[in-house]
Amino acid sequence: MNTRTYSNTPSPTCDVRARILTAAGERFAQFGYNKTTMAEIAKDCDMSAANLYRFFKNKLDIGSNLACACLDTKLLLIKNVVQQTQQPAAERLHNVVLQILSHTHNEWANNPRINEMVTAICDARLEIVNQYELNRHNLIIELLEDGVRRDEFSIPDVQDTAEAITTAITLFSVPLFMSLHNLETFEKRAKSVVQLMLSGLEKR
Amino acid sequence: MNTRTYSNTPSPTCDVRARILTAAGERFAQFGYNKTTMAEIAKDCDMSAANLYRFFKNKLDIGSNLACACLDTKLLLIKNVVQQTQQPAAERLHNVVLQILSHTHNEWANNPRINEMVTAICDARLEIVNQYELNRHNLIIELLEDGVRRDEFSIPDVQDTAEAITTAITLFSVPLFMSLHNLETFEKRAKSVVQLMLSGLEKR
DNA sequence: ATACTGAACATTCAAGATAATATTCAGTAT
DNA sequence: ATACTGAATATTATCTTGAATGTTCAGTAT
Image (tube, rainbow over all chains, first blue to last red; front, top):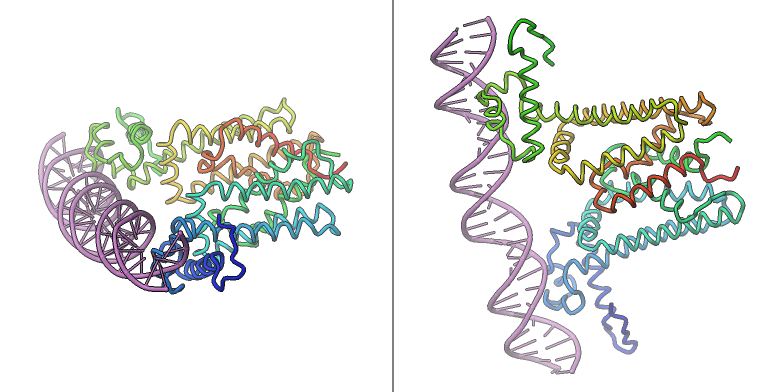
């Protein structure tokens, strides 16, 4: 990644990168990743297609950067929910799951283009989605530990439990599944799953 | 479905159907659904391809029948676990989840051909997989109700809870996911999920 | 040296042609 | 009538090829 900055130059490298990403992002969102050509992105930035390669390794690299940003936004939304520390941890868990569901559904329903891009990128760059999963995992751990600290939760192994939660909400995280039901059905299911995760089956 | 039987005929209709299904099943398992031709199935049964259509509507219909049988086997395995009534319900739930995981993983690892077939069929005949899901759902309900009857479980809404469990074990039911981890990792996760479903997070 | 371009080259996509296969049906044997 | 077949037809998959696009690079301007 390029980390240099030219504070006294009118058009620093990182600005060019940002301009390219903006142009590409708009095209990808409107016409899809595959239908967008490097020539078009270049034209939007008043440069040649060849010049794009001075700033990004290739088209996939542009896509990856956008996908990263996309996943970062997603992560930030979750973080915001987790850090509503005035709310009980149980409620925040509930909100996290609904947040994830809502985002997945939105992606699928309102912006199949973006989804196409993210899919394409994730196929090629597994590490990006891995990083996202790891960050999400850590946010769940943060939430669980907070719940334990506040004496709301009793959790023998936070690490395992966080993994179990991630596993249990798979249905809400994968856009592919969104065609199975409508949003209300998913929300109902999400509530049931959270309910189950909170109280468990065993008699107390 | 043909339900007539010719008890005094040496080669009754239903035997021919069975012969065709056996031949097709072997071909599908060995070479895959798409690579198997109707002519080949017919040759295995010493008949013309045209004659197959007297017993099955089309190729997909042959595949559907095999897929049904496949899912019925799966269901039977689950049923057997559920009905081990000498075991505690909690243990049986654990075994059901591991059973499902093991079957999904097996399908994916040892027999991609069969999997290809089931996928092809399910794409075309959603009602088959729906029926399977419904039956599985009912088995889970049976297990939960038994757990409640024995005073092991305390469950406000069995219907909702069964749906929640089905949802939570999505990762173990979809062959597509099997490439993500190795079997041991999945088993560890399955145990964590069951643990979570049994005890819940909330302090008691 | 640095920023950039146009043209060359490599790869991917898509439309059309071809071949393989599924399905139907008229016709034969019993 | 019933069980079945071979050949005809419809559908689907595979291959081919030209065009479009991604990528590289020698060369130009500053």
